[in-house]
Length: 575
Image 1: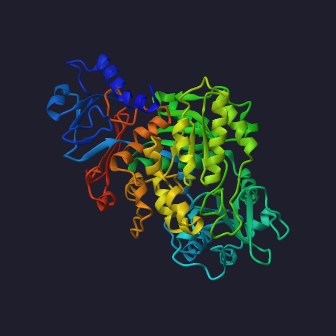
Image 2: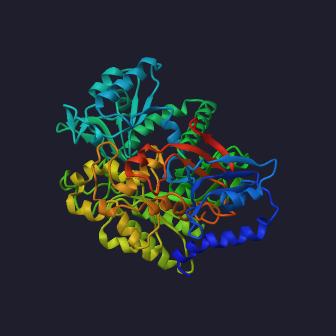
Image 3: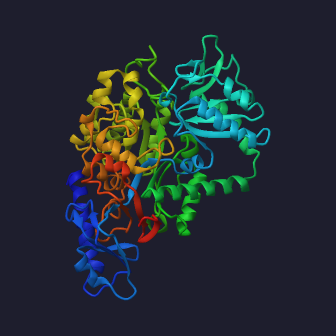
């Protein structure tokens, strides 16, 4: 049985299992959702009006009239009033604690100029203690409406920032997370001077005189990060833990109000994974987390005992994957390309992690029966990762259905697209990245590379490749409706700029990529991702029908209700 046929059979197997267990006549539901327009993502029963729940699981799916037979005096009835309901969105690639911290620190995602950012930092500096670091994230020089007067490659000089924060080191991370901006005080603490060399896999951006302007790309960020880490080391463990748990609380709230019921975390340290596991066992997670370990080979080689951890806390936490990377981001000139950038002559990007290191980590994943997930954005990076995977698969032919993933897979050479299908590789791609990056992709890559290989969803889907959708939060807003809109229109929401629409997904494909596709990508399609008897009761109710509404109405859609494990976790005042 091939991989896709196996996936299509899952709803039938779950249905048969559920019917044999707990849906006999006379069984009562603890919750009924009735009078709905339910899109199930289940090919055996694509549409329904009502769902009966018991103990956090789906008991039966059908018409309102039929399911009222499962009601007794103790049953809670939720009238959907004809609204659109579907499986809860699964964030297929994000950074959970990073999302939380972005809600604590300065957030520049919605800024449109360097002046706005400087003003926000100035306000923070007024309230900061001397020596306290000011942190923020979300700026992107390609998305500003104007270029600063003094700039290098569109990046401003640090002068204005340094002038308004002379006593406070400042570290402002690029939206992609692949570069940062530092003020003079931060560079002074980091020991950065005209003589500071570029580290392997990174660049200190300098002007024609060799002076650092304040921008540090890829591995060069380690220079500033080291100084910031030294500052953090002086804080109490109690205060750092308190801040972390607050960030997680904020991340949960942000996800639930936007209809996200599961989150695939793209790289956490051991201490975070241990905390997630403890929270899951204590029943204190409000959504489901699926996580990747993110450490160096040396840190992991003797520290994977007990992994993978699967379905901890009744399916609320799983860590069955390892994360690595081979390049950076296109916006920060870090994507590793087969041919040079159009707007940075002779430069082909950055190989950020030595290939022998990535190969060693891939061997660890194979040895410990864990999924390998590698960040690759440029076409050269994707080819290198595919080659590493092919080498591992050839050396271990007895291991099948591994579902190894390439995270982002944004820019592909057309010759490599069939290789995803041939090896069963998951293309973990974020719809919103396409339209967010669209204004500068052609400038970076030229028209032909952009047309044929930039976010080539249609080409991948036509090959039978599974696409796992998401947002890469906090790189982008975690809102799945924005990413869904980008996936089905390839248009920017702010100005309707359209990026090679022939690579669009259909409405059904995009919902699948955000539900059952993501569940499949994490080996979790047997218990979530569709409204199917026996599966967990994770749903989102929306104000518009995502299958049939107009394109503009997608952006007008509101989350009315979010349910996880049969419990309402968010309810709009409008519902």
